Image (cartoon, rainbow, N blue to C red; front, side, top):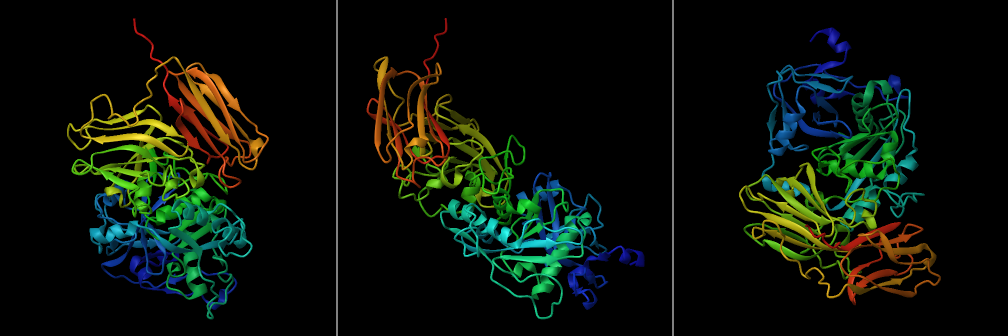
Length: 609
């Protein structure tokens, strides 16, 4: 190799894979970049990783060395990465990448040059069979997290170690002084119903052989010093942080320190807001994005093997859950995952609340459908026994459909799209592995979605919605095969049969401890007339009843508001609402945020001359 290339920090890949020389004691105040041995070795291997960079198009193939350094492979197209992952030829975090003779590393840019023609593809080696791969997708138990604050050559991460730990672990986590109520830990704990916990990694002191700057690991956070400027970019700084952690704690890779290691880079280091390696330990954030709960959940979601949630074939556009867009909010929006991601995570598969319909098995379901927030909810008799996920399995297709009721309540009260509607999502790999999902339908009361060629033939399928009870459940009908071409199967109960022009409507309210915060209205949507309203109220924990004689044949909207934004159940009293028509309950609820709107009925059809 020419000496000029050595000065430019370009090395043969084997020199990086074999070993690195530790920082010299002449620069003890700041971690010095390691000097790799120079040499060549044919057929060297590294772990193949795939990165998802938020708000940047495409997937990036990377090569992880045994010491945790990660180099972007710049000779491979994003399209090849996408197709190879879809066929399981490439499994991020599991597949080994065979590095050819003559491949070089540009350490200053964090790049691996395969020196192959663009028409040639990398050689891959897989060690897992399909059954072992399935085990990667059920994520339960406790996983440890280390948050890394960075002091670079000319800039530092804005937040302190204490602030970072608070934003990730928050109240009740055991972190000293932490009081953040909404964070990575609290949201995953709530969405998984206690099945997945993120905890601070163990306290750890600096290695006896290390004399440079940096902190002990405390409350799941650490500060590292690197001799890298922000102008050198995130690829270079990322590997310098990795080397610093290895030296500071005498480990072979940062992956030894925790299951997930979050690098919070100084402002100006990277153009993306955040990214993470799929099925891996590392995620990287642009300064304050390290503290935004939606970004935390999104990037750690990639570590857990989750892909993006799309709509209209546009990445991130499905905003019903956290694998869509991320937001610049410390404590919100509160969201969980769409139906396909929820199925993949495996949190709800131990009960009959996750069901599968197919041509070769059960073909239909008629009844109530609740949201994942209602999993095993013993306090909610309207939801605890209802299905929360329905998979429409297609044997002859690469993709299947997944259905849930997107309940806007609890840990999903901030959902940004399709609130209190039935959502249908398409995804592949049987809902078990990494696959980008597509939101295909959002159904309200009276809506029907048809699958004209459900399983590669003339067989049809349909999903229809008869009633939505606030954020509690929807009454749906789902049928594969035996569905009429224009109508979904009849729901039970059948649509209301008006025997007279006017009928009695009744609204019953039970107030919580703060009755003056509650107001509501019942609106005839056919003429936008408010026919009944109530609140604010005077007495806490008190029942109020309102009634009126109104048009039977009409579409109505019941809208209830809470001035404080926490609904009327259940943090400050067991409040509730009920809407009845002719003594039959139509809507029941109480858990909502600032407001909730539910619709029922339909406007009379206009006669055609």
